[in-house]
Amino acid sequence: MYRVRTYNQIAAKGLARLSGEGFQVGPDTAEPHALLLRSHRLGVDDLPPGLAAVARAGVGVNNVPVADCTRRGIVVFNTPGANANSVKELVLAALFLASRDVLGGFDFARSLATVGDDDALHRRVEADKRRFRGHEVAGRALGIVGLGAVGSRVARAGLQLGMDVLGHDPALSVDAAWRLPSEVRRMESLPALLARSDYVTLHLPALPDTVGLVDERVLRHCRPGAVLLNFARQEIVNAAAVKAALETKRLRAYFSDFPTVALAGVAGVYATPHLGASTVEAEENCAVMAADRLRAFLRHGTVANSVNFPTVSLDAPAGHRVAVTNLNVAGMLGQLTTVFAEAEINVIDMINKSQDDVAYNLIDLDTPLSPQAVRRIEAIDEVLSVRVFNAAAG
Image 1: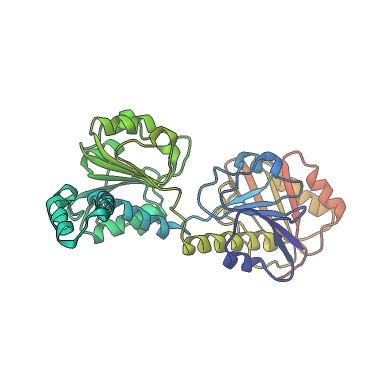
Image 2: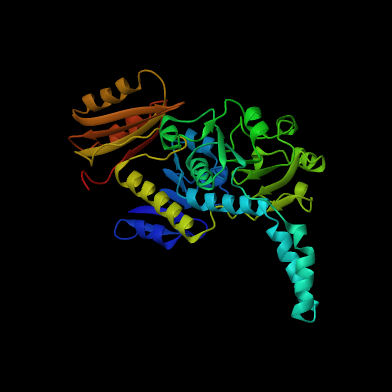
């Protein structure tokens, strides 16, 4: 029985992937093998003995103690791309709101509630509508910082709107480059992109080299009157620098999905309450992907979309499967095969991959691994975790 403890409200469509015989799933599940969550913040004390995996139904894992999980051999999954369309649509909404003063127009129209008759109301409308005049986005320059799952979608949408689309992503992968429309102009540096963009939208993860990336020094390169959109991570942008840029008119507006005390009430700041993935479709997509990753890992040891483990997959078990996680040091395979040889167990198939300081092994054996052999493997200093699977197939 695989036990999965849930946090937050996980979409039923995702939970259904873990239903049926062999799974116990719920918020009160004791001694879990895995945790499934959305925004709940985990602490080290929330990682019980025997835990093998954490799945975050979303992209960011800043609410998960990843380093502590890695040290204990716990796989951390996320769901890249599952909410990309939802975020893209909210970015486009902000883009349109930044080009046309729709919000000001709404407020003005509401203020007409006390006008007594339609003729007087229409005169007010005609007299004041020029206050809310904007411009079309077609022909304007859209700069995209980060060209992954969301950024590439925003790029395609910008091109379809007739915009001149510029992109900057020093960490662009080969797969992401293939997905990117050829019409996107690659900028070699962030200052070069900022100097040419009417709108700049950020699509970067919060990493040590991206936290505080958009600061006063960087914003000096912006085209005067530019609009900055941040629907990626709050930590990427320095709030004080944005406030100063708005006051000097270097920025015309700042749209963000992350309200902060530092920018609350500041003119030109428009914040939404973390709505990027708040659609029925995105919540379902993230829950389904997270549940599928957990199911494959718990049943077969397969790892995909992990932030701290390598991608590893073997065909359905061709024998009795064991998974071993160890520090990525020389000589480990030799120590493992020595245990198997002395136990007179033949290796049918195996795969070993590493990522940073961690190596992960999936091994199929012709006979079951005895408890004594398991203990011998666990006793190796560099071994972080050992999992023996219940069945030889299925």
